[in-house]
Image 1 (spheres, rainbow, N blue to C red):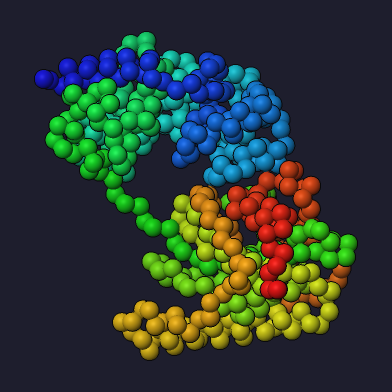
Image 2 (cartoon, rainbow, N blue to C red):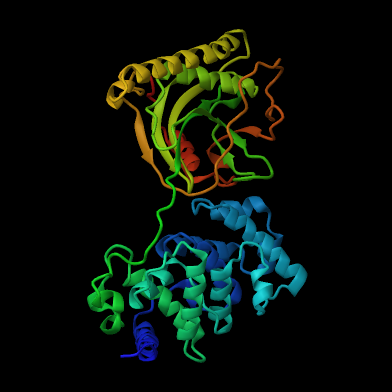
Amino acid sequence: MGLMEQKRHFSVNLLDWYMVNRRDLPWRRHNNPYFTWVSEIMLQQTRVDTVIPYFNRFIGNFPTVQALAEAPEEDVLKNWEGLGYYSRARNLQAAARQVMELHGGEMPQDKQAVFALKGVGPYTAGAILSIAFNQPQPAVDGNVMRVLSRYFLIDEDIMKGSTRVLMEELAGELIPEGRARDFNQALMELGALVCTPKAPSCLTCPVMEQCSGRIAGRELTLPVKTKAKPPRPEQRLVAIVEGRGAHRGQVLVRQRPATGLLARMWELPHVLAAPAAASKKAPPLADEPAMALLAGSLWAEGFAARPEGLATHAEHVFSHIVWSLQVYKCTEQAQDLELPLIAAEARAAYDAQAATREGSASSSAGSPESATTHLSEPGTPNAQSIPTSLTDGELLAPSDVSYPALSTLTLTGKGDGLTYRWIGPEDMDKMAFPNIFLKLISSYFAGAYEHVNE
């Protein structure tokens, strides 16, 4: 059977299958270009089941392009909280303002105009134009490239730009006249439900009879994909600072600068403990130097706090970095002479720990296990673990420890754009946090760390 017949078989059978098996998704119930756009941005590297409640809430709060364009950024980020890749939300709002200013609030139907919107790439542009306006534009993402690689037995590396161009040309040729909306969604649906990455359901696939990859026994080895560089590991020390006096019942948080990664989002104060080797995850830092370094970092930012003990370990996964977090419960202190002493000792304690680590490593070449035997196990009997997985931009570490003259409690860090404030449980619904910090703060207010160091 020739290539033309193979293409026709794919298009006809895929559409027939989709019309019977398509999922009932909220953004498919209305032929609304804005809904299509929002859903496609949310679905980038995020599962459909995860997106549905976020989409419903987002559209409920920002039902039109104008509503999104005019909303405070803090509200937009709060509605995005937990989805990760927060630049998507900022770009979406910036693009909504473009639509208002350049297109009178109506989603443009011209390919170049759609592509010019902030945060819209080739796939998203193709999805909007085909799904919202039924234009015969290909919408090629990882799912689509996997399906086409298998069906047509394409051995080209899908991480290469030239392969994407090939796939877009092929996908465009497969779109039946007048059926772009249904066909592109059918192609996405097949990749999501049947032609999955690790265990494709070939026996229920509507195009299995002419799938060249299945016939060749290659369905599990396709597509060809160069492995991405593994994310860099880092150790970070996190402070849950419990307020006293006027701040009783509150914890200290800080806001990122107005520009850059995770701009204006809120977080718990944290500091880089030690960068690990590029391909090696370092062991946890022992409690004594870790708490000294954390206290010194807080002091340098204008806050006196004493670490009381390890509250939990957590992991935070970005696209290019993995944080191993040691989270310490701390108590607000008066700004007296005791905390400057802790801050001054921080560097000595940390340097001693680093020297011990280097000496042990050099004296035990070829025996990686013995290189970490000097480290004490961090933690208390009450330490808990909170696993999370997100992908987003890297946060910046506070600058090196210094010891400024302190007056009363300040709300602004020393020249790096960081803003601090004390918050209670009632503030959690008003401020946007990356998911890991949302979990940690919520756990604190729920009483999870009451017995640390008892």
